[in-house]
Figure 1: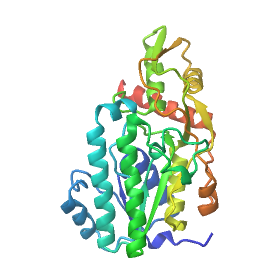
Figure 2: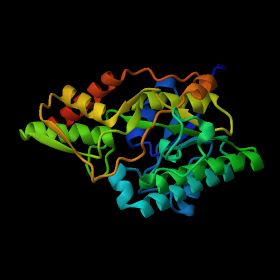
Figure 3: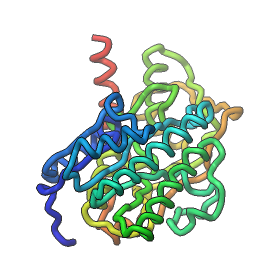
Length: 319
């Protein structure tokens, strides 16, 4: 690949204090980015046009925007707040991109989601199948919003020649994730449930669904590397998956986490709760061809690091 001079870049990372954002910021520091700006929500509410415009006015000379700010959560949070998830995310994405274009910022990196794919997509998910159906119902509002960010980026490229790209990470996990059971994703939820049950010496834990769906998980540090590589080297209207290429059932995932945590109790499945999308596994060839990205973290290794991060944080909180 052509060398990229990160030292000359002035980068705005919306959501840069969040789970994925903090790792992207760390990776930008590793590659030597010249300046990294992390706007705070209390200073710039990106759901408001004036705030989006002010963000870019306050940071002239910005060369790159990586838009990670989002309202996110697991199946429960998506079911409880579909309106919030739709409104917050469509406003933030639309305004962040529009005002970056108006400010003539050279490049915009939009972050989509695996949830944007149709409910029944041939496995592995290929980017060309994105429009061949409606997303899984429990997170369709969020997934469709992210599709619209892709449409906006392609429209701006077609009309204005604007360099906006769109990346679609699969399910992320790792240190720094949210372990709040109200809005956490599946890996931190499973870790917390089992560690709580272990600490309280409970004989069983109850888990959502029947355990049959499959998911693909990408370690957050690998995702951050992929985003930074794409920011430097990808320039195309086509969306691009970021994934590990490894598929695992929720049942096997739960059993693996129980083993790594050391929880010996029974895993009970509440089939009155939704499973979500039946299968998720993405085709990762486009990312490897486009900017030489390949996930490097072994899944069990990543799970151990995530569990240890949460264990240390929990111990410090109770010390």
